[in-house]
Image 1 (cartoon, one colour):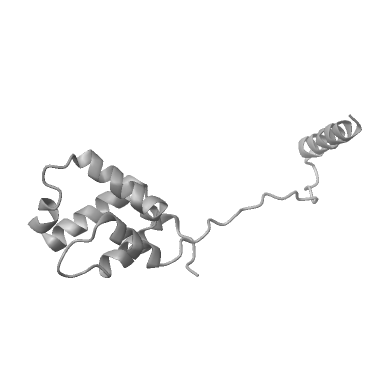
Image 2 (tube, rainbow, N blue to C red; image 1 turned 180 degrees about the vertical axis):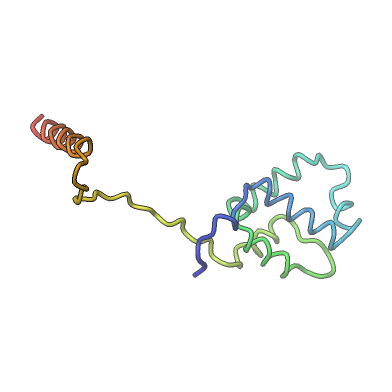
Length: 127
């Protein structure tokens, strides 16, 4: 399993720009002519719908780009299949903010705050 790294993630729009930029460089005019006469907004929306949340994880994008057919650009559905074959998107780690029972001496404010919190919790339980 891949380790979580914030830098591996982007927005769907950034991911699609990355994919389309690389495909333009790889396939040249063949890629851009593929959608002649089609509204560019529609093309982007279809690709975003087909690829979904997989567009946000850069290692998946790189995997799919490396595994494309050398002779012709993939369709949105074919690229989505390549993305799904790529590395699993790691879960974002959960950070638990815990309660530290050891309050340094002289921390009257913290001690008083904890007393107030305990009182509020007890009042809530009693209600």
